[in-house]
Length: 274
Image 1 (spheres, rainbow, N blue to C red):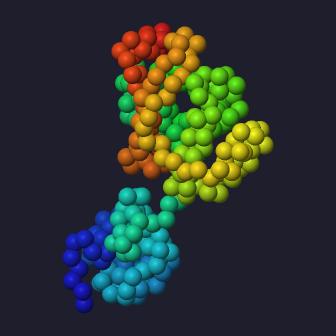
Image 2 (image 1 turned 30 degrees about the horizontal axis):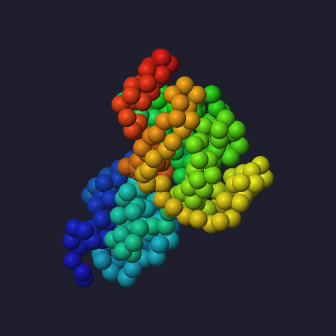
Image 3 (image 1 turned 90 degrees about the vertical axis):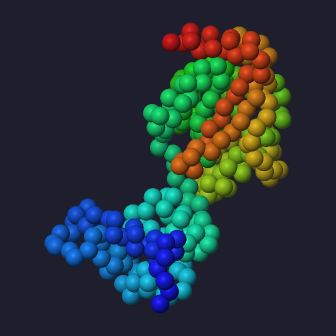
C-alpha cells in the first residue's frame, strides 16, 4: 500500500475528513475517532464507500474531475481547498466556475476609502462595479446615483453620452475595454452569462457590436488614462489592475494622478462630498 505522507491526496482527504464536526450534519452517538466516517463522506459525495476508502489509502488510480468535485462538496471544502484537491488528484486546477459577486467586505471598502486622491473601484468578471471610493465618484462616475443593475462599465461606456464625452480618445478606450472584458469573462468561466449582455449592447450600440466582432483579447494590466473632467480639465491617471486575493470573482483597479497638483485637486473634490 502506498505511504500516506503529507502532501498526498490520501493525506489531504483524511485530514479534512477528521476535522469535520459530525453534529453539524445531524450525526450523533459515540465515536472512537474524530470527524466523519469514510462511508459518511462517501454518502455525502454520492460515490462508492470502497472507492473513497481506496483514495484515502492511496490506491485506485487517479479520480475523475467529477469525483473530486463531489468529494469537495462532501467535505465542504473552501475554494482554495478545492483547488488544492485538484492539484493533488489531477495535477491541475479545476475548471473555472463563474459565480456572481455578492459585494465586498467592510475591510476591502476601507482599503478603497484610504485612497483619498486615487480613484479606485472593484469590478466583477462581468465588469459590474460593486465598490468604489469618493475619488472615483468625483473623477470617474458617481456610481451611487446609478441603479446597481446598471453599474456595468461596458453599459456606461457604450450607452452613456456623458461618459463617452469625458474620454480623450473614446475609440481606443472602447476597443481596449471590449478586448480586456472578453479575456476576463473567459478566464472566469462566464461564457454563458455574458451572452445576454453582449446581445443587449449589440442592440443599442453599433460600435460595441463592431468591436465585439473583432475578437481581440487583451489583459487589463496597467497604463495611462486621459480624461476630460468638467472641473479639473484634462487630467492623466496611471492605472493598475489587481486580482483580489481570495476573491477570484473580483478585480481592483486603482488610478493614480500623474502629478501632485492633480492629486491635491482630487483630494479636495472628494473631501467636499463629506
